[in-house]
Image 1: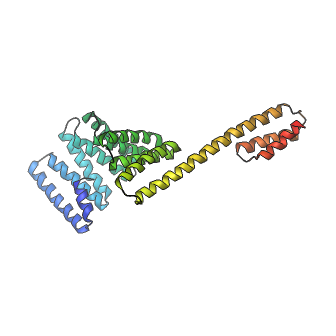
Image 2: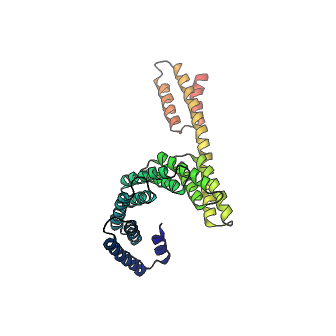
Image 3: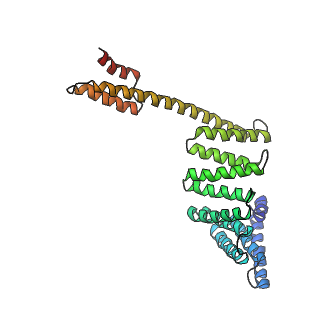
Length: 288
């Protein structure tokens, strides 16, 4: 959220928003007459007008002005420049809001490449750009790839912000959710517990955010326990299937009924529908 978006967001006054839009357009026309070509002030105003249209919910108009601003910045600054990188990211976000996730990702990755060239060491713009690229991959249902970018962003934010910080907390939650979607419950639990610790350092006990995370952690612990039980059951069933295979080796070829019973038990074991008593009936026949 840039300065224009922030000011408007704090007021929530439609008349004020329209007044801001009118004033920005008047200033834009004035600058165009004054500079007779590309100029940083014109590019800034184009971006500001795009921001106003964003608040108004007119994404099509926002895209028009953002793309004009991007073209002008690229004409003004040859090579890597923070304004170009920021505008690439802005245009990428607009395409994301238009549900063209792939095209938005293309712009976001260009922004990330430029930010990395501008800031070889850890930097908040690089971290934010990593996060934005990760979100696009998540929206494309490429959870693993999205998680890779989110984890890089988290590491960078943690190196930039010692102690509790909103950006770190936000990324911890995002990374936790990514691992949860991939059924990595143990890792998801690890990151949510870190998030809980940071929340508890900021808020008092009983805060809604703390209560929500505690509920998530409790749910994860249940899921981990259930997964462990299911894994043990699977191992037990595999052993039973091996035993049935051994039993079948000793069957006479004409004992079709018992052979079919063994096959049915194997199917049920795979589906986890067989009880120990069912298996015992088969085993008893072989021990009589």
